[in-house]
Image (cartoon, rainbow, N blue to C red; front, side, top):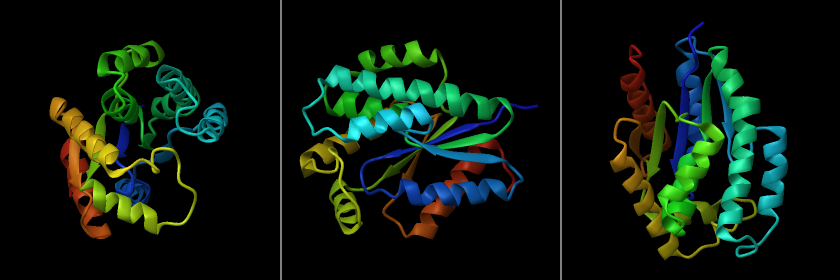
Length: 211
């Protein structure tokens, strides 16, 4: 049985990743591909417990390295309990966020540096990386407006001011520029169906799917 593919969705706050997970799942299902959707921080029982702890504390409660280690611990659980078993049986896994969130947020935007984040990641995942990463890009101010129009509590990152989110956008685009083979940058400022169409095109190109 062929190994499944691992697709991750990344981007700043309010860029519509969670909505597009459903569209991508439907797109792949039309090809007869079995899919599993998941998220970070979370995606496995132990990882969800860490998520609750992580979100329960205000910004500044954790030392930056402590926070990184906490998230990486959840990621290890996610890999071992959810992602790797599904890939082994041929299921394609779609994750709303993965390691590039740590690289963009803690590594570049919050100043820990990519080498430190990547070193910790190698300890939990060795040389495992997504087969494709869809980066949802839009002006940070627009993303914040979308986010504030939604219902539900904000987390510590959503409460950050505009300069933080502008720097975060730059961080993500820098990551995409460094690895253009893995990343596909999607204009997330479009209407929902137009974004879904662009995702379908990028996915078809990456994996040789007939359109």
